Image (tube, rainbow, N blue to C red; front, side):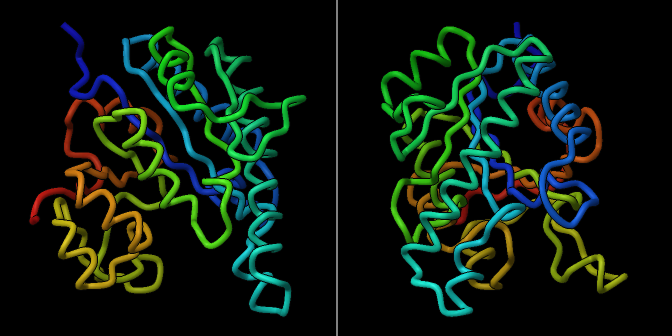
Length: 240
């Protein structure tokens, strides 16, 4: 019997998470750590898909605030996610994890086009799938992409990787006595304006009963611990 509570999961990585302590780009040490943690759980029989952001390279919404056309800025941001996906693929395959990158924007020289049934088949064969280019549409975040793809591939939960150990009622880096939540309902997240994922993603998860585990990705072994059901981070569920 598997030691893990979930058989198929979707891991959401922000672009900012990939840059580590640097102010820009990709930290190879972060990629190496992630690849090792993912290998541990895939070796244990967990099927993993990943949605990666692009904020470490380009943030569309920030660019649009300075005058760039929002749709154009979002397309540039989608291309940034492809760069991150390819870097992550390289690190994971170096660690011995068979990986496929699937892009919502066709670029067949570097990634497969996103096809739902093909993605599921890859996972059934033990390959980790990295979803890049968001949904392929402007105005949709990679948080929303994560919720959408998780539902499409029948994932049992979303794992939201962050640099803090869960969800707090205030920024713990700014407010020393901020209170951490062990569990929240979707309604509580929405009504309190907690920065778990954007409202569209939370609503989509709520409508379909998809739990979200928010955890610290920088602590080695947290991915496996969360999948075993240990009290790691914050879980968002219920309350519908």
